[in-house]
Image (cartoon, rainbow, N blue to C red; front, side, top):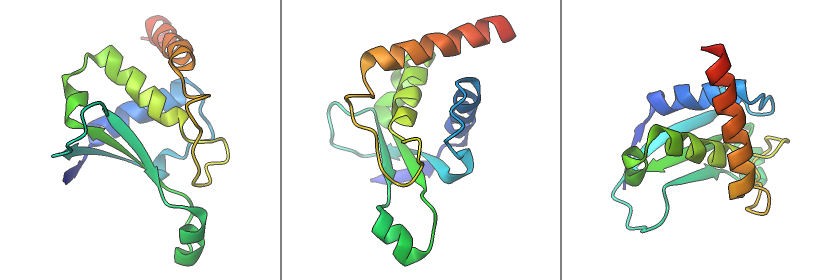
Length: 125
């Protein structure tokens, strides 16, 4: 696997966080990376973190990394925005190193937030 920082996606992520009022997400502690060489067939993006015990042992606050696999760049911009929203939704309100499960991070909830994002951009650009 090869990883490279994706500052363009970080900028888009920051806009989505701001527009959707995701105040619990500290964008400075979320990294965005493109990955190359994955053998996975269905995954487009993944959210990573380190557990609380490792945070304590390293004396660091929670950080998240969102990995965008090669397939991501082949999606339309609208689908990419939905993927970014989906991955952000995995980050819990505590921003403590855990994850929200797919019972919350589901297609319907992503659709609602994506529509809110599109409406904001439509009336504020």
